[in-house]
Image (cartoon, rainbow, N blue to C red; front, side):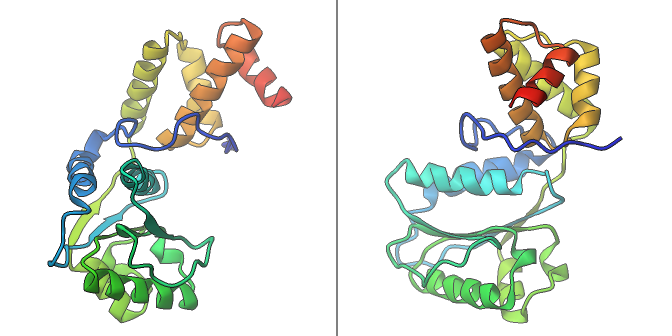
Amino acid sequence: MKQIALDIGLSTGPSLANFYAGPNVAAHHHMASWIQHADSHAGKPPVPTYLWGAQGSGKTHLLKAAREGLREHGARVGWLSPREMPGDFDDGWAAVVLDDVHLYSAEQQHLAFNWFVNAQTHCKPVLAAGQAAPAHLDLREDLRTRLGWGHVFQLHRLNEQEGRSVLRQEADARGVFLSDEVMDFMWHRFSRDLGSLMELLDHMDGYALQTRRAITIPLIKSMLENT
């Protein structure tokens, strides 16, 4: 059965508070400490952190949570992803964040290496993520080895039981009832990574309130037809 990927914006941005750790507790705790101490490395180059795992395991969520956590304290962050080509390193950044490094072009790899070296020179932390372990990244050697010499965490996607449990808890917290039939429909008809399912739940909740209807499969189908 074809799964549907919704293009729906989150009502609230990614944060550590709305990251459901499941089997990724160690990485979650590390990121909490990373945010807290990101600006306390004066005089000593901090050890970089690299997160890796399959799509939907929460890598980008944690990277964005780190960026937003620093922004809340008025800090600026250098962000590089395959979808953009920003400028040179800025020594006013509090940290450098490199997302989806496995997809970097040769030019982006050159920029990422430059940022990495400058970040170390200016004692700024580096946080990066990709789908493969450092040793298996198809990147230039000097960048690949630097990504792998610090803290490395593998992230795992939640299994079906964990994902359903989290959805049920989130629905209960909202005062929303999800029948087993609705849960089955959500799980088998939409992208199964937790971020997408949470976006779907958020959108369904809003649509149900707007239409003053309970969340049912017909309501979901009506929502898809009218949004």
